[in-house]
Length: 78
Image (cartoon, rainbow, N blue to C red):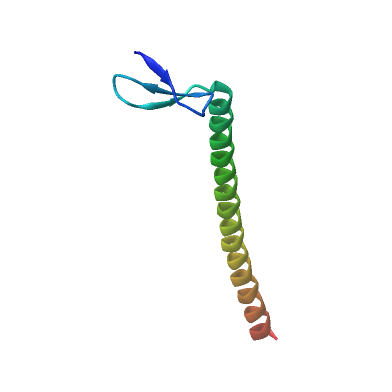
């Protein structure tokens, strides 16, 4: 694969065979990959938090239902 430096860019070359533009800056690529990984982790954290909140809401609904039943029974026993 033969490469030609793209004018005006230090880390970008063109593959003469395919015409593809290639960024040769490995540190920028590593930073990009790290940002993608962090974004995915953040999405997973948010997804887990939403799941936990929904579980808590369901449990609170169940507790409320039980308490309402207990109050109703208590009022009937009076």
